[in-house]
Image 1 (cartoon, rainbow, N blue to C red):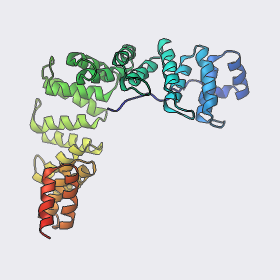
Image 2 (tube, one colour; image 1 turned 90 degrees about the vertical axis):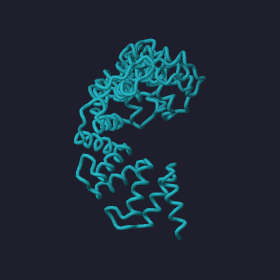
Image 3 (tube, rainbow, N blue to C red; image 1 turned 60 degrees about the horizontal axis):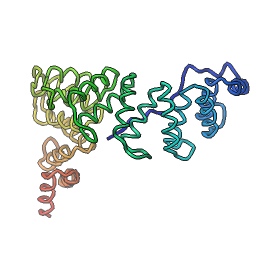
Image 4 (cartoon, rainbow, N blue to C red; image 1 turned 135 degrees about the vertical axis):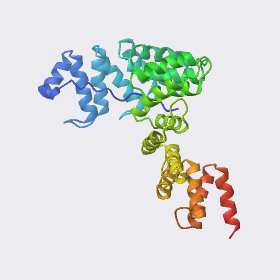
Length: 335
């Protein structure tokens, strides 16, 4: 599963232009932790000075020691990712723990990911849950999302769909599109302890789609195409599939291609169907490759082309589409 480690935290309100580097250095040496943090960022990004991660770490350490916790956090990110220094998970964990303890809760989130996935250290689900809960309870919505995923999957912790639902709601409210999508999916399919609720499903899928989460657009399109919990509306389904497709969702491209190929809720348009099946195929949706191959094989909306048919049946077969494999074998036997 994809993780969501936060990147370097930049405190944008710091403006060192008011001071020369020499003056900032004096302030830092005099115990101004915030100024040390700003100098760390300058050396990390190479703004007016040569990029130097080692120097950046030195300044972030001064900031951290002086009580400016974003400095501790940045040290953790640098060592975790090996930004100009050798990766060191132990140093990363220590720095994130300092930032977490002192109230910079993105550090708690990163610790939850590190312990949950065993990144450079021994995997520990109990610690992962503890740090993620702390981040979630302090408005880090990605922490709520990750906890929700752990609870709905029931891997390494006991599955708890109602708890996952609550966590996804927090994530969604915090702007996490995947949280909105997972809420919609749970209400659409139902889970142990959570009854199907199609109106709620459409509401949260729409919210995820509005924030450009392609799978939310696709699933909501399915609801409108079938009239599943909403009034059937193929025009809106077309719009939603188109949005999903434009966001790179192969099945959205395929479903829209299917509508045009068969005149389902739209005027039949083979050229559009061909282009959409090609997009689906390019997005590794094997059924799109198969349908494209079939159109070339039969000459539907385009001249017959055995070479192209074999090409796309082959792609379908490579994508483990059995019909594609059978069609390719049949064409090869006709040599």
